[in-house]
Image (cartoon, rainbow, N blue to C red; front, side, top):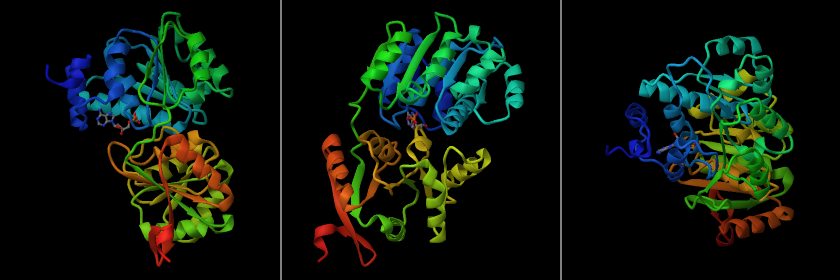
Length: 383
Ligand code: AMP
C-alpha cells in the first residue's frame, strides 16, 4: 500500500478517484484528521483557508457511510449557499471519480422546498445545507435525524456565533446522542471552543497553524488616496496590473451592487456576489469568475467565506477591513495551493493605523506603493 491516502485509511477506489483529480499527497490537516475521524471521535479542527479542510472531513465519510443502506447518515452544515454547493460538488466529483456511490442532497435556504423534499425521498447518504432549512426539514420529518451518524459543522466560528448557534444546536439535538460531531474553521476563538465543547464528548482539538498566520507566498501592498478616489484608483490599478483573477472586497454587503455598477461604468469585467442576489445571478457570477469570463468579483466578508475558487491572483481591499480576522480571511483567497498572491489595500490617510496594526498582528510587511506612469512602484522611489 504505497498510496499515502490509503495509509491514512482511505479505501483504494477513493484513493484512485483522488488521483484522477490530481490529488496524491495528503495535506497536513488531512494527515491528522482522517485517521482520527475514523475512530469516531468528536473533533475540533482549526486550519488555514485552502489547507484541504473539506477533503479532510469528506474522505473519512466515504469509509463510514454504509452505501448499501438507503438512509441519511451524515449532515454537513455550512453558513452560505456557495459553500454548501461547493461541498456538494466536491462530494459528487469524488463519487464519480471513485465509483463509490455516496449520494448527497444540497439543502439551501431560499430554494424551492418541494424540490428539496423530492430529492430527500431518494434518501441521500449525505445532506449538506444551511442550518435553518435543514432544521425545518427535520421538523417536517423529511430529514430522518435518528439515522444520522455524523454531523460536520464547517466554518464553525460563523455557525456557532450568536446569530446561528440556536439553529445549529437545535439540529444537533434532534440526532442520537452517540453521533459523531466535527467542527472545522480557519479561525475558532477560545470562546467558540468553549461553546462547542458543551455539545461534544471529549473532543480532540487539532489546531494546525497559529490562527493568525498568513501564507508567506502572499505579498502585501497598500496605496493611499482620498476616499472619493478609491474607485478610480482601483480602475487604474486593474489597468496597470491586469490581474488574471481578482476579488474586490468591501465592508458592507449593501454596497456591493453600487460598487459593481461603478466599476462596470469604467468598462471593467466585473460582477458582484452577496446575500440578496437572486440565486441564479450569483451562480452565474461565480461561474463566469471561475472560468475566467470576468476578471473581478466584488464581495463582502460573509459572501466570500470558504469560497474555493482556483487561480485568484489578487485580492483588492477597496475598503480597509475593520477587523484583523477579516484581513486574514480576505487575503487567504489568493495564494492558495502553493501559488503566489498579491493583496492590495486602498487606504485613506486616516485608515493607515489599520495597516500598521495588520503588519504587527500578522508579522508581515505591507509595502507602500504608488502608481507612476501606469506602473506600480515603491512609494519613496519615484521622485
Ligand atoms: P479547502 O481548504 O478544503 O477549501 O481546499 C482547498 C483546495 O485544495 C481545493 O481546491 C482542493 O481541491 C485542494 N486540495 C485539497 N486537498 C488536496 C491535496 N491533498 N493535494 C492537492 N490539492 C488539494
